[in-house]
Image (cartoon, rainbow, N blue to C red; front, side, top):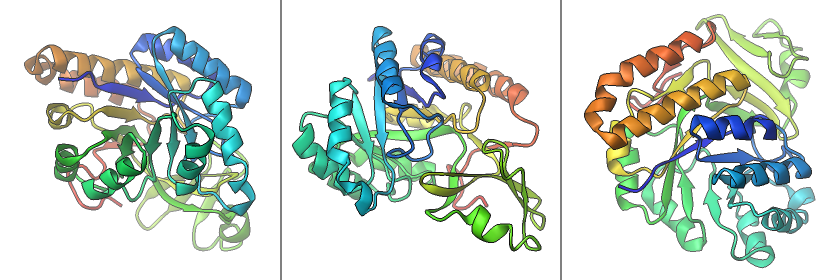
Length: 309
């Protein structure tokens, strides 16, 4: 069985070494001008530093260019790809075909990971982008376990699956908080609008509290619960999924570190003996539950049902 990658999204380059020691195999970094919903903002010098630190520990570092690009940024893509290549990034994460086209000219040897967060729902599509040049497909968070296993069985590319953290429910390029919801305060209440990591959209009818933030890419509304699959990894491990992603967006560095340690232990136990994982998985889940914020429950996302919210 090939070694599975544990992929983590750090907040700063200073998180790289602790997370590497905790068991992360790879990291996603970048700046919001080109990357979508990053756990932390990395300028170019910080991207270089993150790559240097990751490589010093034998880890991979991927640069995110998975934003939705409009004309005003199209001419910048080749230059940023050359920067990532010169910095020795292990891959670029993209969703827009413009990145793929620019990479063919600017850095044809650069490894590409296809990630749209929404349309990675079948193996035909994964293989289509593989034949265009992508080496990995990042699957949508809205498909169930059976679909993931079937995609992996038929994929010609590596398969990445998010196993922990928030999911994005909605994105708009517009600044919706300022332009609409504050004006429509009778419909939904917005709390702490000026604190980017403490803003919530309240749905009083359903009793849900949705994290919401704005950045250069627009407005993002996130899931009210955190996905947690630490006790349900066996089917994907048996199927040979290539990468498990822990998304650190809107999480503390301390939380991310402990979650990484728990998933590293879970994966290593399974690789040693699946029975060891079965015996320990509930204890590992309990460890995460102990550090989970009280206002955010854990669930299994769409893995075992068609809809959640």
